[in-house]
Length: 202
Image 1: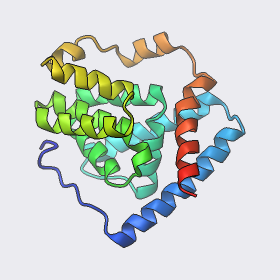
Image 2 (image 1 turned 135 degrees about the vertical axis):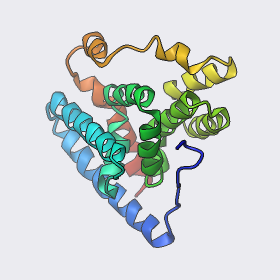
Image 3 (image 1 turned 60 degrees about the vertical axis):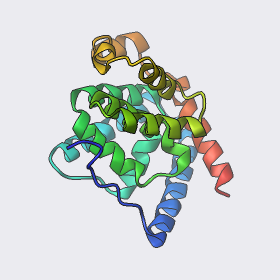
């Protein structure tokens, strides 16, 4: 199974409205939580655990509920969590495609960039160049300077084989060493995204 034949149902009007309401509620709650300056390690740990639990569920043929899917899209704004998802996309690209397509089907455009970039990466990894190009184009149309999308776009433009990047990717342990312990600035992209989304959603 590849991203070309996975179901991608679009929400009906009532479901779309419920998802928007749920997204606003979760974004408000998370923004309020972050404003109290909770331990960064706690936020990152919870986000990583949510990602790994989702991967396990989809690997077994299951799925996650709407609230978890929406929170995952927010979690992926934390670079440490996104990088873990990136590594998982190389190890289990079909499983991660299922996770990402299901998440993408339920989120607001403000949270698209990391999800769409990871979808582009998994499509590239699976040899689905056209799908990867479409995903990158959609991300960059909204966020022209999103680094991961630009990296995948450059690789596609230069016909770089996915294996070339895979061979250079660090392990989780190496990422931990390079990034060090969690720092408050890890949460800044998430906080900025939440602030922008909530301002536009008023």
